[in-house]
Length: 58
Image (cartoon, rainbow, N blue to C red; front, side):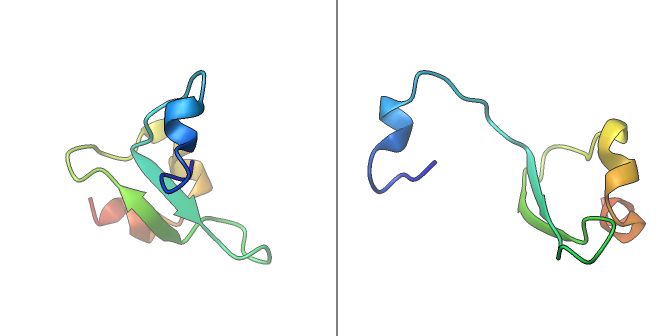
């Protein structure tokens, strides 16, 4: 959601995210962390989707 146009305030719902991952379309697994809550660990249920180097850093 974009903060600059008050989309958050006008939304009816939403969730707080702990992580946002990114990758190029030609790569199988996510290899970048765009957003990370430093107080949280990457859940086991998504580890198969990301490059192991990302969760070994945590």
